[in-house]
Image (cartoon, rainbow, N blue to C red; front, side):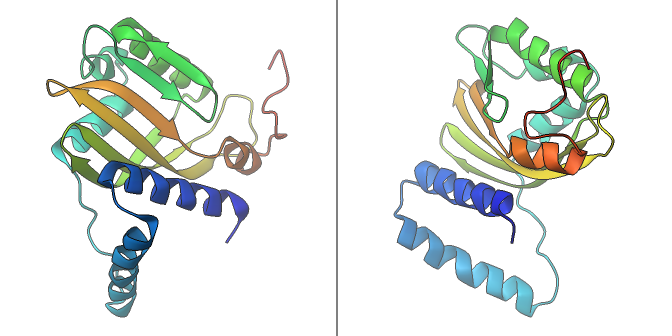
Length: 181
């Protein structure tokens, strides 16, 4: 297992523990039988998806930035892409994030792999794929998003995945595309 996958897997476990409010030991005890049972059955279980996760993914994959922005509260919303250390605020900021992402990665796509909801929190598991403009290869990396809700709308959205792995798979240096690309 490569370092990027280990880092993302650890991050996913920590995020799930944070949302669930349980101990790391309890979380690993719960997770192991599920994985063993899935392996024993020799097929992957269908992912559990929350209605918000399905709506969020459809809006994320849409060509219209307003679709994702429309899922967020009007005042005080925030979208943070931690891999690229970018934060956007308000509905207009969320729409700008979509525009910036689709400009850098025209065929950017997410594929849901699971979701967990706890009250006003959601943890969404997904794969992020595409090919950055100017990159020689495409990428596909695991990701997780932690969402906080207010009144049924998204208040905060925090994306976590490995930028180093995106660059490695894309055939780019660790720092990404050279300036002017």
